[in-house]
Image (cartoon, rainbow over all chains, first blue to last red; front, side):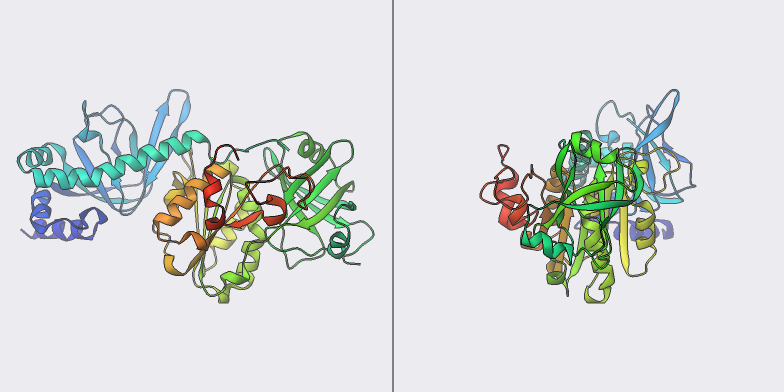
Length: 158
Length: 281
């Protein structure tokens, strides 16, 4: 019980929980776990089953792409208050990138199977969770497009 | 005689300056310190630009990137992107360039006294903002929070890294830097510069923002500032257009009704917002 209370308090402090009903928070907490990753440790690897998502409490996670014969490329960092991972929502539910702790990371993780089952049976919860994930996905898509533009390149010759 | 005074008397008159120092900044960019041939001083305001001339290649408008409180020299940070900037980049210390200026409307640093100040820069756009940063930090007690948000392609393409570290080391200034992509070893943010706006800790109701970088970066940067609650009348941008005469005569830099050289390059965003998204301009 103490453990559940602690998780509830941790969720309460995260921006993801803003505006979420207490009853829905309680349902979510039933699928949550408190996790800690040392710097350098992987939270997940590309191609692995996306069975979780993470609410970052503290620390920085680097989202990386790796290719043979060259160092991995960091394409994004997710820090305090961030949401990491949405592949659990989209078939085939495989991670598209590596996520590596850049510093000591404390995060709340959510079991996707558990949460998906609860979302299916409770549309209000499903709607609230999706309402929070769609902006995350939209921001990531927007950011990826901006990175494709080469925002900082020279505009013209002179 | 004060060189700036002379320039005002005859803005088409090119004056010779000697290259005192050249410093490589990035693979394609360098900074030049210039002093007037025969002595004298040079005054300017943050955000203003000069027309730099080199024999046989032509003239090009370049923002001043030095400290406005130091009138003994002019500092320009230049990217080699075209024939004139390539030619200037091939000059050596001790050689001369011609200068007309300073021209243009400056960053309204003094008007921003009393508010929080957000400086949002991308790539080489940090260079035209550096004089405003110098002036703001010299008058630090006149501002609320001072926040510098800077984005670059990669860690090796960060402009003025030592100064960014120095400014970040101050206890009264927040400096956040991000890159589009990085390799292991980089301990900072990775992601677009707009991501830095959220959580930067300024009071949007009492904030003035200066934005400079490639135009597309400014468009998205301004969106992020507006989403954070800053009114567009509190946002200033520095525009870059094909400036030729520098004094509003030739019309090369006309951007709708305004001339960038004369009415800008610094504009209050609400005065130019409509033109910002017109493709044909």
